[in-house]
Length: 394
Image (cartoon, rainbow, N blue to C red):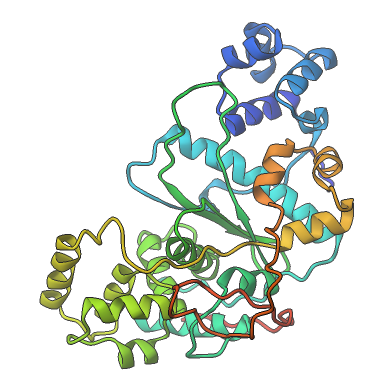
């Protein structure tokens, strides 16, 4: 990866601290390098000394090349987060650093191996109506070679086959603190447009929440790549996610004012969406009025289902980045890959985890969610072919 700008070791040192959640004093204590020197380097008051950067690299288990690499810029105003309103700025800063480094690594792996980039639809319309978002969700299904009205058994694999990289993300704690990192973020994404790398990062939780997060972030890529400053971006992405996971015609067919919570639980197992998301979908397509929606939410609270719903949706597992990593660096790719990509091995393991061993028992192929267990059936499919994108404009 080339750039007309030289990498700044001081800026990279600041990025490393953000990435690991470390203060200057903590880096000093770990490495034996004076915190005043760290401050001076980060503020460009002095030129960094290689030997001291090597001490910091060793203490943080980071390749020294990290301080000299020039990452591809991810504009702040184009980076989208799915997060709670309570998310702390300090944690958001860490998430941005983690995502930026993850994007750099995924872009390197994808471009160096000529993996196809996504042919997603997009829009630059000033204002989107509800039917526009439904249309774009339908066009996204076409671009990703999905049936127009069927459940999506494995959304992660569909995205990866379609050229959208997916990376689980973990905020590591190198400080030695006993307090866990409180993270109110669900996902983050960026795509600059056709021909460029797209990456969706998510913080693993329950299977149904992960799927909605992926669909939500995909919505940002489609709806907001060329509309980065729209005010109601989160609401639009939520609408898109619901429309992608349960298309309009099926939502109108399956959801009604008579649908009970028990029936919603069965539909959760089929569609891989939470009961609460299904209720909201029913309201969005005009099959549930506000009175019925409130009643269903009261029932959810009474049963204790607002915080813990029945029916477990199995967690999906990304594969693309691991496959590219192993293809380039061999069966044990983390150490050589981390050195080449100039990234801490722990971060590389997070965004490109080793796949869990496959079950040895042969099972008959399935194309829907297991209705008994609620688990999402992970199946193999053909790689999505490049197609011309759909653009919605007014």
